[in-house]
Image (cartoon, rainbow, N blue to C red; front, side, top):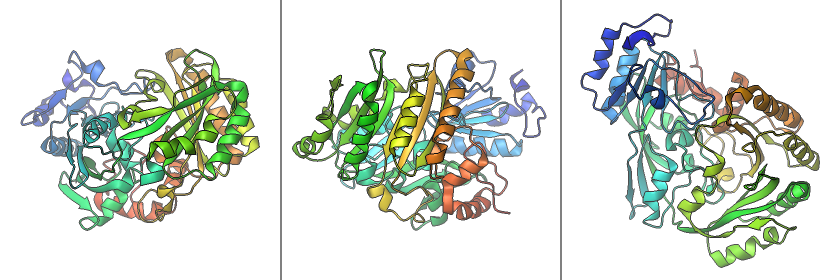
Length: 462
């Protein structure tokens, strides 16, 4: 019965008697389809993804990860790796195969003297923020506290501190990784430097990272929040945002979003985070606060963990999600009008379009210094459809594709790896940019049989 869903990569059933090979000596929990909580445990953040794995191996430590990989290799199983399970593309699960689940491995250890943070592979951003804040420190992570650290880091990692302190992967000092051969290695700038290069932006292609060591920065209280307006002010606000950001200091990160406001009306808002002297921050953001007639302004000093949770409610659990995104050449007036026109067609209060400007410290890192190739100081447009009723999928995915096509004439051909959903291989290759060939060579060395394939996949160089 337990093996009914478990099949190898060729589609042949795997006898249930083999499952004891995994269970024996496993310190975590092996969850099978007949278990009462199987349907709960197989869910991930995006409710549109409905997969039924043959086994979920909830690992308690590195030895469990090694055992799960070896079991999967012996029986030629399809493997999905789950950290936070927050990726929109649903790559953290699979049908009929084995999910290696690190969500029970969420330990965080801070060395306040060295300003380093050791983070296990299943930790969420909020886990890290909670521990680092005690010491007045922060690691540059993402913008939603429920996001998994592992997936964020391996895809690059863009957040509120990126313009000042770089991407998440730029702050990675070393990591422990279990490879496709079931061997654990340490990777840093001196040891296994090739895979360390690949892990900083190459996604989950090379193995399972069981722990990360990050550099932390002295960030405790920031100036942050949201300034919201009615939708009829969207065009002039986006133009003002564009002009303001041309000379904004690097310790200020600002995004502009077209969204439905908490009172249910269509709106537009700037969301910002200033890290540094608060009085200087007040002076810096004054042109933003003095623009137009806002409906509300929540800008205030915030503990950094509170800043990290500011938009959690806009990323609800158990909602259906479908994303598109792309870098654009410039935030032109024509593009602004296209975005506003498309948002007028939205039929879900959870759907949004977010405009993000990067650059700063992240943009000064050479493109070939890490696997993350999108170092250009351009705007990224995130088109995020979210809804609650499953039968509405065609309506919302159709709008997302239409909006993506509408902005296509303005795009530069680059993509953020962590924002890619069900894209064609060409889009994934474009996200890796000029670093793709080197990534293929690393893939061939560490995973020549493409054991780790449920990711933004890099085919091994043959």
